[in-house]
Length: 310
Image 1 (cartoon, rainbow, N blue to C red):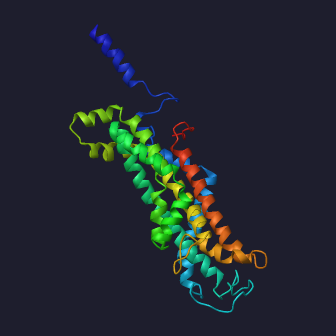
Image 2 (cartoon, rainbow, N blue to C red; image 1 turned 90 degrees about the horizontal axis):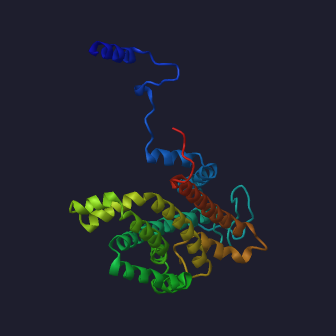
Image 3 (tube, rainbow, N blue to C red; image 1 turned 60 degrees about the vertical axis):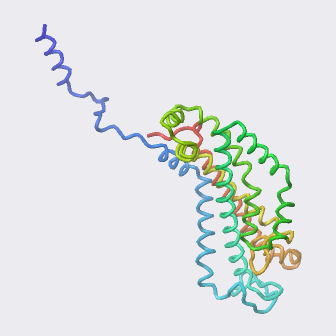
């Protein structure tokens, strides 16, 4: 009987692989979650086109001022029409409009990035701690969030910017102070769900403290929603800053922004429309491209979307 079993085992071992069989060592390695997310994002055509547009704008506003012959503070003849020397003409006081748009875009992007980082940090910290600890902490954070939500953001920001001067970093911090609530709510909901998972229970049983559990285990598992919301916050900050500056309560001289450039040339819309449409088109392109990038990231991180084939 032993000899028969040995022969059967040997026959199974020596049997050559069929045409449909795949040797184990030749099987493709499974992709990680990060690779799947990147693959899906790269296949999102609108998001990729928007990324290219945004990167092009950033490169232009960072590199072009080095070679552009006119500084943003330099003045020539006022109200020159568009030409090869001044593609967008000049303002009433004789400043080259291209240099003004470049400078305003730099400040608008800087403000938006600062707002996104600060608001995301506040929202993630408040939301994750409230969702994990619950109880009195959750109640306090929730009431604070509700309080900030009922305050008119633009009105409060306009008052604070006026009181603390209109430097770009003051505008950024004020907008961040009123831009973290939605992120906190989303993070809180995710933290409440994740805190019931086995890996959190294991970390708690091993003696890990609240800080370690929140920032070592909870936050890394919420990176998808955090990334998407941080991206969309950039677009919201660009528009919020432009709205404040357009009504004269945002960035003040000597700083500038796209909103302020639009404000300074709004009166020329009928007679010299290029002075208005130049910065306005750049503002719209930045806002739309960031929103489409956010949509692409949301679809890429969404597990309900069709997974990319391995």
